[in-house]
Image (cartoon, rainbow, N blue to C red):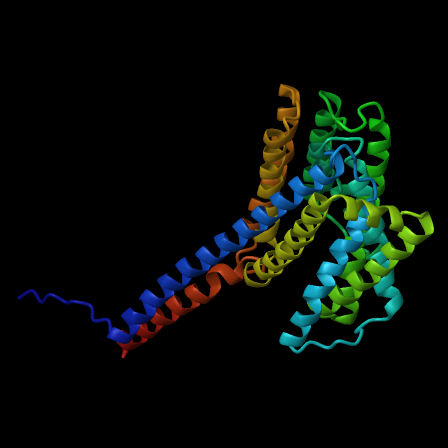
Length: 361
């Protein structure tokens, strides 16, 4: 006689398995939502940034980039303070003020160089500068934090650097505002790369050495950045002209407000994605964001581009995507990848282990 053995799965186990599948789907949906939020807000931010610095308002061109930096930092402080209250994070400084100030100084002047560069080079060149900063970040990391990097990291950084170089040398790179002074734009970008790499390294060291909370760092770094911006505007005599320009052109005020809002909104999506899904997913998202931002800029402002520049872009983003994909594939148990699948897989393994134990008994 042949006895047909039909496996028995208790309803509770079946329900748990279904919940696990739904959990993976739900988390994937949230990951896509955060990614779309990051890309959408930063694309808007990039378009506004380029428009404010290169488009005229009733025949007048805005020239006070530090004023924009101050507005953005004040908006960030206005967001960080209530968030600190809601999350019950400490309002007093968790690290010495001078360390916050160092981050603020490098951050303000990095952002100012980034804005100013748009007067002399195209938005695509500015965006590629953010990829080009891989080398400065790695060098600062070795000098300040004693980090070391593998062959793959240097290879990817070299590929990105060569792709950027090809883009810069094989087609138009100048801004429509001042097409005859692109060298000044490149110098400003070099300053931006050095200062932005320093800012990232200092922020990382601040988190590591003092375990400061996210909103606490946002409050103090952005608050001090606003003060540094204000002092810079007063000392250079640009505060009064910037306010006068704002009063004369309401359209600028609306653009600047939307620029600050998109910057703050992007931070919400960025912190949420990093917290829930890790730094590797965020890095991949930012790679997509760069591609989308450059394409939208070319379409919106009708900027010229050559076939060889397109090849350079392909080399750059292929290297960046390769780095992100390999990091995720080779680190299945690390925190960067764990948040997306770990909970659901753990529940599923518990179901099967429990069933196997019952069968042995």
